[in-house]
Image (tube, rainbow, N blue to C red):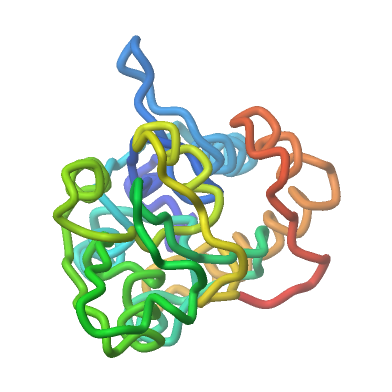
Length: 241
């Protein structure tokens, strides 16, 4: 409790976007946040017996960068090596693949073809997906945005040729860009996992046990399905983040 809910409540960091994913939450018409991270965070708070406060961010990069500021207690984030400098990951609850959404009329036919001079790839700054795209498509020009909405608007207007996001996110974003298409394959295959700020080993053990319980009980699968993420894959039991 001292490490995970020191303020008497569980502060759950969530990333908000126009479409849900295993990580991203949405804000509904009533002004309420909904998402897999919200469902898991609420369940963790109930297990701890404390109220939950949702701390909204524009993306996983914002969450990562505020890890040392004592603004949140737990988050649910895509795993990459850069992010491990800021947070400690518990076990995985989701198998993650990231790929590209190509705008209407775009001629990029494959993930590999995006790595070419003159190709403009948009994404949200400091996310695991966008970092990996920069590494795997070094010949392309990468254009970073603070919010998913701005990246989608840039694809619609033709200011970028493709967007780099998780496949789940792109499934929700595609209808917002008429004529766009999601490429087969991926440039990032990773996991989405529970995370805590560094230096909180007891909190890390607790959230890891919680994630394993949530997978075994069917809570993770139910959370995916509730958000319309029926093709999302639950990580195997015991899988490390």
